[in-house]
Length: 115
Length: 116
Image (cartoon, rainbow over all chains, first blue to last red; front, side, top):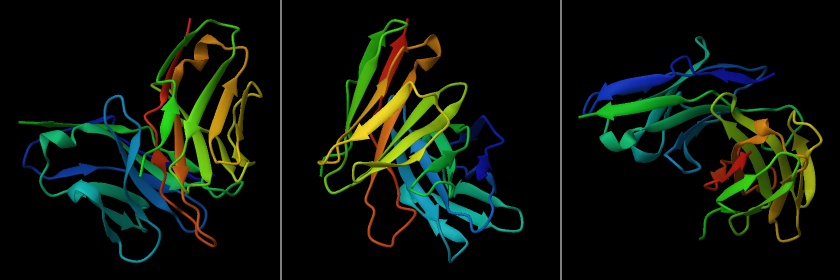
């Protein structure tokens, strides 16, 4: 079965500093990986995805993610954090069992950016 | 384009009742998925519909059911509600082009269901 793990429940970072939100995956076959963000009382918003190609994927709002096959990781990064980046971040993997467009999500990481 | 619309936004029910939640996908999107979000379990996949057919189902009891209409709008129903069904139910739609996979999901704001 496909799965992702987000080892940190919460990440705190000062505004202007770089941020990293960690994600590791376990899949059979090629991984199809996603990052989503959830603001309070809202649904999830797509940030970026990795299907194939360059290991560095650029996404919305200045975020990027680095795919590392040897470490089975797909960490989310941003060079300079903003207070408005504070939100709940989910890593997800396309679940290939049963067909369709099913995603399996990690448990989420709460990012808090402080002044 | 209008986003994914879920109604109602909030719902309070008592144990044993049933509930129907509605989702209108983005125009042109034929795939609609449902997820349950709880603080303890995170996001759990319920089911996905495409062109009125269920093409994937998660590990939920038969009390959870859904359907999709010819205009791609979808409903999910939960019968005989239990306290543990209290959650945020999220609907997501995606555009599935022929031969394409891994399309991103567009989520609605969800329906917050409280079971008392």
